[in-house]
Amino acid sequence: MVSEGEAFCPGHVTAFFEVHDDPDPRKKGSRGAGLCLNLGVHTIARVRDDARSSIDVIVNGRRQRAEVTQGVAQKVLGGRSCEVKILSETNLPVSQGFGVSAAAALSTALALDIALGSKVPRDELVAIAHETEVECGTGLGDVVPASLGGMDLRLKPGAPAHAEVRTFPVEADLLLAVIGPEMPTKAVLRDPRKVAAINRIGGALVDEFSRGPTLERLFELGARFAEGTGLGPCGQTGPRSDSGQSHVRAGDDGHARQFGGRDGEPRAAGDLVSEIRDAAEVWRRQRRRARPLITRSR
Image (cartoon, rainbow, N blue to C red):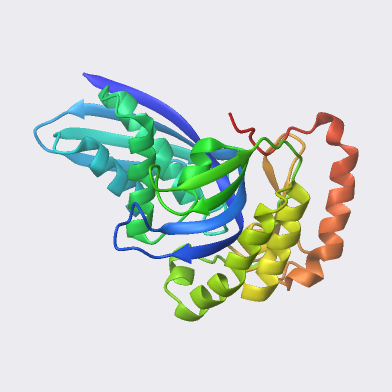
């Protein structure tokens, strides 16, 4: 008999952050601030008891290695012998700062727990997703705020029971632009010079933001973080496309839409400002039909 569970986790973008290391992956993480999106990862987990365990992960219709998803599934299963199929769908690009791996990890943990009927406490499932992402090097601070929604201020790092996160109910329309090649989180976190720059600038911005947390301030400080660290527009919250040859904006139906460069060639972020502003002006005129892209915290 096949049992099934289903869950959704929003994408999460971080405007600025500070790395906190610890040998315990549940204590390791980041201080920072960011936003949750209405776009994210929708996961269906199907489970059948079997003498030989197997975990098959399919993302957007294609079989993937999906290291984080595999790790989460193994931890949620424990020693149980099952045939597991994880079916995830997302319309967010990967390695562009949208927290896709975190959303996949948490939606997998939630969906698989439902399929198994285990009724593991929600905070423990969040902790498993955070722990696995830290161990895989794909992120430090997206899982916990993604589990809460809204705009977040992460004052203490780590999984639930260790983290201290303040959330703020925010609803707004966003224009999302993808500029340049992928920037995998793992590559950033393994570069000592980048981590040093992140910590030098990010910690001070977290303290400054805590004195007046607003959406406008988030983007203002995010731009300062991006300029100081070289991580891209708004600290990777202005994400880039996989090919570097097209850019993405939020459409009036709440989905990401592509608009190509005039010459089809990659260009510096500064060169795209006028094009993004043109798209933004058209989009503003359509706001009567627009759907918000930021979740409210509950």
